[in-house]
Length: 113
Length: 112
Image 1 (cartoon, each protein chain N blue to C red):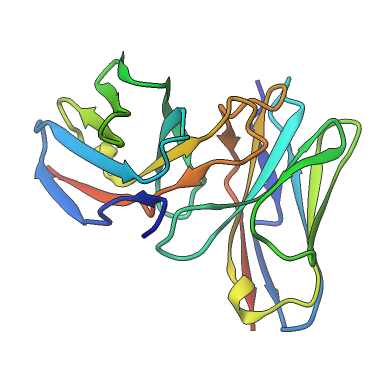
Image 2: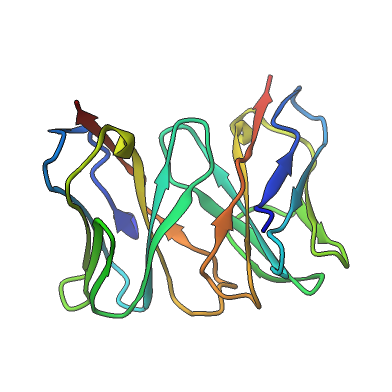
């Protein structure tokens, strides 16, 4: 079992829909949780950064962390064709970063115009 | 504010050769992490440099080594290249070693 599981998709939704992206993880020691967006042939772009359980909202994006279920989610409201990309969840044991980020495989999202 | 830059963009090497990849961190950042991303996979942590010292390492063999310079730029060196080393190599910078990391565009390495 991998440490971080993420459905690779592709996930195809119509423009304007609410998108839900999810990751599960096995190690309860993870404390910091991130979502990155990666366009084809580009580096990942940090979208959301959260610590421990709870919700965080930034514009059209909402990140949720449920540590009791070892489950994190990213919601995208009013989805746009420009949101089409691969979305990577990432997590870390400590705030110091020396243990590196552990990533899921990424979910390929397609927003249909 | 200048973002993370990497060079070269693409590189082709043959098995057994050595390669050096370069990274300039985002303005104000003193920590650099390197990741390997194989096709269809998420990035995997290679190591992190903070104040010119390696302060964390993932599950990669010693033929993967690095340097960080006083201006916080960094190099990733890979010796004795293998076919499985073909991947996108990503550099990420952060401030004071924290894990809010910002990535560069990557260097795509092909080993033939």
